[in-house]
Length: 263
Length: 208
Image (cartoon, rainbow over all chains, first blue to last red; front, side, top):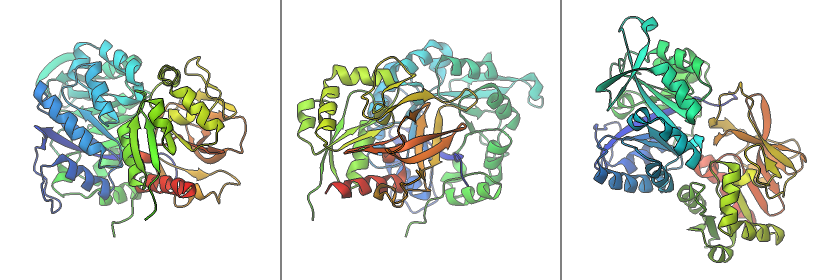
């Protein structure tokens, strides 16, 4: 099918240069090595990768730079790096090390101008704003969503939808939108949240938090209006293969990129 | 085994140089990264990556002395490969800032219409432009998906240099151009998996 395909993005949590959640879907020499995992997902047909540095201390920054360089030397697909990014200089260094995009989360909420400065320095297309949203009332989407920071631990009271629109106006080139209510539940994305945000902005939105099946991923694009879908554990534990997920999405009428089976 | 082509990837703080080097190495070249015009001039192939703002990319090229190098290579018909904004720079100018482009190709660079989701970000299909179906660059590439990330696109005033095209946001735009010894891609071959590698291999094969 013609037209821009819906990107499927596995997300890897990294700390101290190692992938934290165990990964068990293939016989890996070293299941904690981000480079080997990145290579594997590249081969499996992932459209993009997302690395989230969950330590994000200043030492970790140097280790992450090394990981980014080694991944850039090994994979032929784009990747985003996030977690603990605080400055334009952080963004520059990660991009120079070979990352394609940088995501800002807490630091952008604390000082929104950071997004404008970063976009001016490296271009909007390299700047992602990661938004961790939580429903104000669990069963009532009409009550809206607020953003949380510090990995979801701190509520801010700030409206998630207006924050997304503001981030776009400041220069973000993409929104990585995670539903903290759905994260880890495998019950599907918060489609109300996705649809409300995709209707409010003109930049691509990556759906995250809650996907458990290929149909969930397809729903993110078809019903939520997402340009890309992200998941972690369902890929890492081999519950779903990238290739099968894409077949499922194609069966729902979505354009996807298929790669030839490795021979 | 044939000698690998020496490729200089221009580092002017406006592109993913590391990935460009990896891409050309994977396609069989011997690539290195440099911001020094003298060093770059000793290579056999120049690669101009480009990410970000058209006018800032040009300003950076100019400041670093690499624009003069690039012009001299184009004039001498030595092989140059421009990626993304590195391709857009070949046109006469852009809506994105007042800096004039290199002017090798007739036409200008414009922004996608406001109703499109911008940037055009992700994997999109590259089609052979009419009359270019047999261009060797497109072997194993035409009809496949390659990776794009851009908010501006070229509006060519001459169609002959347009080898490949793509459609997005209601516009049809050049994504693979060639003029003499110069090739440019709006997509990122170095980030486009095996298909991107094939395109680079196709081009390098012509040069050896």
